[in-house]
Length: 404
Image 1 (tube, rainbow, N blue to C red):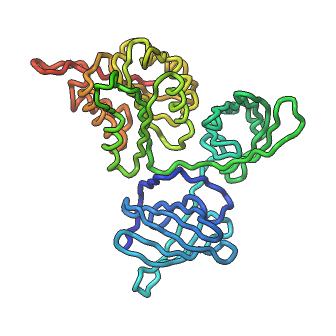
Image 2: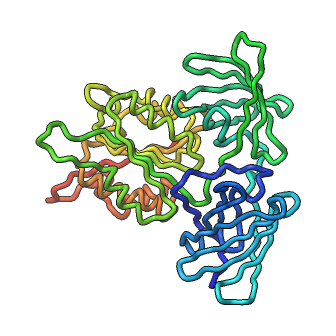
Image 3: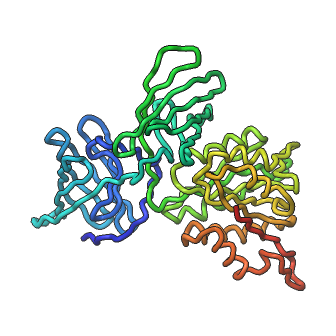
């Protein structure tokens, strides 16, 4: 009824799970039958999802023995049954048994808790004051928290304590964090500038879901009059990748620099790798939207903390022709680096769509690096590069990938 998996892509429509060292059965588990997420419903009730042969399966039940035993039922596409798990004393593993409905024989089911495997502040955290991204470079640590405020935090690591200052739009102050033994929780305190009162600030690491990737499409509106029908490149990509379980697509529109910055900044708060596609009109000076031009420097500021960015792609004309990509790379820190791709020509809209469906599919569906996908793209579709074909309706697209 079940088949053991050596590796499985775990996908959830919901937000990534927060790992907590001593939260009983809650959190992410690597189990006999794939990656499992368990979360609390109410009281002693738990529910969750595990992935068996890339199919989503349901599990739900209740706790006994002071939370150390989970009695459950499960539902798979072709079967259902019951079982129980017993938590190890250290909370890092469980063992148990299951049996299919109508069968009397019990079979083992074991699991181990996912761990960060590192005593580092690097990563995404769910804290008392919003989601936080921290980037550690040796002893120096910086980051952002609260997607609405996009407040900044900066400091140094000394004797395993991160001493920091923070800056919000209307407040500033200082504080400190320490990691717990497992490295999955922050404990610390903060106080506002001029105040003597310290207040608690704690958080839990948000573990990335294994195998999950994001495609974020930030798009300007193309229509210029009411006479034109609505059309969107992002909507096409969203439909195309809906078939891929481990790819999450987010599509947002921007109308000016502020709305562009709002959406792009939020990439830093995702724990998994991200491919960012910016779909807009472009020029050698930058992205054009309305009467504004968003420059390379402004783009790099919006991406300053996006340590999870795997690729920045411009679905726009002329962005790769001159200095904008180099300007972006030059303004990034050593801890944040990513390749940039796009076009050096005024590329045809429909040709760019064909190119990007193929390009993104190789990266997101076939697990290629952007560099390998770009190489394969130019071999499969020479017209994507600088090789124009005689007597064809499309000029060469001028696709380019620039390494960091």
